[in-house]
Length: 156
Image 1 (tube, rainbow, N blue to C red):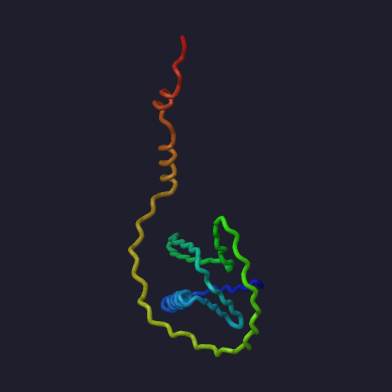
Image 2: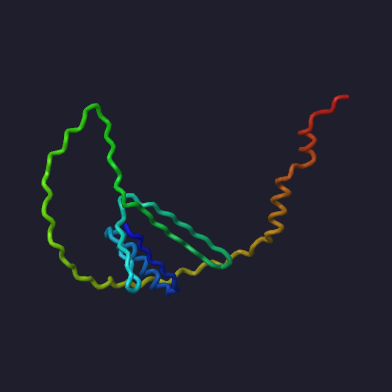
């Protein structure tokens, strides 16, 4: 199969971003995801088993959440264990192919209004990283009393 890829990165209004997520959820539920950008498009059909990866992070005042869905086209082979050999399948004639029909494109779904994002609580002041690292190192170092207890007694 030929590789197909569409990659778009842009800044949107909050409500428009929510609309895209809702469109993706609707498409996923329907079993067919079509992503279009300009003249390009990619059509995907999720399988019965879908892997999901979710990442969320906040760093230097920037908040980010990433969802990744993946699946393969390969159907899983059924496994059967028995003591009898399977019967040969009956011979069948291939049926003639039906003529191709063209379907009309449907207009895009309308997007519902989304509520604005919730206000976040102010950040707590950061602890000084250097002092935190020093405290960790100090706690990890064995104390003199511990070193003496670990040494074997000297013979006289």
